[in-house]
Image (cartoon, rainbow, N blue to C red):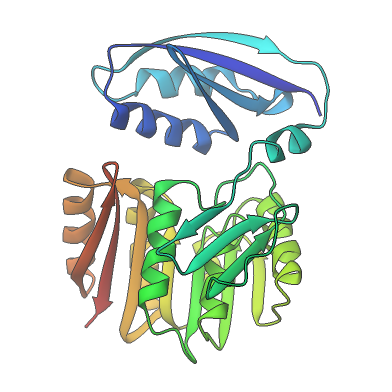
Length: 279
């Protein structure tokens, strides 16, 4: 597959601004990011590069965040292999060890998740995924019906299963993510996860005890009404993919209107995850 590299040169910015801009780039198809001395590089399959969408994303970048960019078309190579070479295991709360198939087994951790890393969101390295894993570790998942909305590689669904969930539904709009989820549940010898390709319309008629949604603020706001219809009384809703402060305030107000009560939050490098319960 032929890839394009877009080198972004950033001028006087806060780290949270760069993180938010990268999240927006991911929404338009960029799948890998690499820090550079004066900015960062972003990679996208050349066939998926839409200059109009890129210019629009730059136009709507956080106020005060100014970037220049340069596009280079790269020679064909095995991008997954190159990406894997930079994939390192992570440990969450001294309980959960996330590794790739080519890393050594470490039985000293209560939960070990093995993934075949593809260039997709959800390896556990991003702050939002790490915080969601931490929430799952703290939660009682035994015999619960759990939804992992925007599942990526399925790492949250896998840990929920390990924590005793009776069944887990993993949904993503990207067929590559659904394929990755299916492969990873086999790697972890799990049978009670179902993976489906689509969006929140798939939730109609289903009721979950726990909903996990690590996406972004705007999509969470769009989908939260359906979450309120698809969660049991006293069910737990875990959200991530947004920032502490204004983002959390907006989401909390919207959740309250739909019958959710704010319980707690986690913050890591200005990224935020939050727990709600349904009254």
